[in-house]
Image (tube, rainbow, N blue to C red; front, side, top):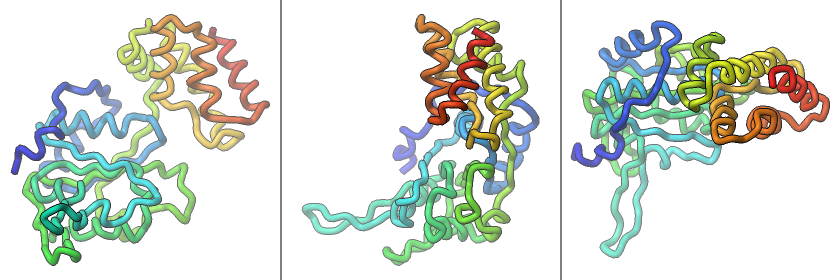
Length: 267
């Protein structure tokens, strides 16, 4: 059965630059199989962190990108028809619990609340997952851990997690790294020099200061990696920044002009 998880093992070490004691805290949490919640803005490294920790711990990682159309059956499983009749197929959460993987629910608040309720029995001392349609109670494997992430600054009150869900998790706060650290990350991930990477980070810092003043979200580290990747392939810096940093985050002409001006300041 463990062979079913072979494809979920991360073969190469993901690059992750720690910004605090999050690695040590997560290792301690995994040691007691505490469910963990990663909170922070889009593109700040939450998913990369989970991948890095799964690799470091030598555990398989099953990732689910949550969305508003996701049902409980998408998580736990369903009966399928085949030539022999009907058969049960485990969903990703059930597979992780049954076989002993880390299950990562990315942007969990995007899922309907009646869907997220199914995780509750797995996140307390019971560590069980009832499969009501199948009439089975899955006891979580000793290696199983549940990790969720979301962006608390972006969600409306209607989409925020219930307190009954939040209080089942330990939590780590993530944010964009300090200037020098983010410069190092962008340079490492894209191959551009520290000078160019530092200019990209400076542009992002200006944009982040506009969050709530015309921008819903600032420029993420992920977007800086996109920009650096284009520049490393020979794309002119201003054009690369327009395509990856300015146009994706706003359609407002005045805001675009302000961000284009910030790009021109550094390039």
